[in-house]
Length: 266
Image (cartoon, rainbow, N blue to C red; front, side, top):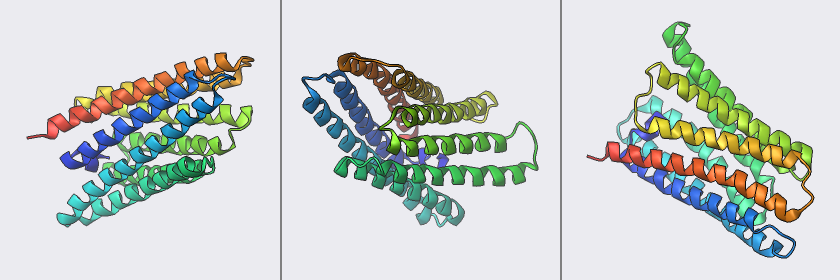
C-alpha cells in the first residue's frame, strides 16, 4: 500500500475510484430506500446501477495500482515491483468479480473477488514474515501488525465469498459478521501502527474513521438480517440506514485519499 500512497498520479486515480465507489454506495442507499411491494423494479434498477458504478471504481483502482507499478518498473526497483504485481493481481480478480456481478447479476462473482482479497492477505502475511526476520522477532514492531492485517483480510475474504450464498438468512448473517470482523482487524492494525508512531500522515485519522464506519455498517446489516421484519418497506428503510453508514465511511476514505493527494502535490 505504501508504494501507492507515495505516487501522486496513483493517488489521484485512487480518489477517482473512491468517488465512483461512493456514488455506487449512494445508489445502494436509494435502492434500499425504494424497496417496497410497489417499486421493486425501481429498487432493482438502482441496485444494478450501483453494481456497475462499483465495477468502474474497481477498474480505476486497478489502474491506480498499475500506475504505481509502472513508476517502480521505470526505476528498476525489482523487489517492490514484484510486490505491487501481486497487489495488481488481487485488484484484477476483484475487478473481474465485480464485473461478473454487474453484467450477469451472478453472486458467484463474489467468490472471484474474495480470491483477490485472499491474494492481498497472502501478500500481507509475506510482509509480516519478512518484517519479523528483519526485526529479529522483537515485540512491538511492525511484524505483528502486518500479521493482524493479513488475518483481517483473510477473514474479510471468507465473509465476502459467503455472500454468494446469501440467499438464505444464515449465510448472509455470517458473511456480514465476518466482513465486520475483518475490517475491524484492519482498523486495529492501523490504529496500533499510528499509536506506535509508525504512521504520521494526516489522512490516517480519516482512514481509521472510514474503516470503523464500514465495520459498523456490516455489523448493523447482520443485525437487521438476523431479526424478523415482516414489512418489505420497513426492511428497506432499515437497510438504507445501515448502507448510509457505509456511505459515510466511503466518503471519509475518499476525503483521506484527497488529503494525501494535496500532500503529494508540489
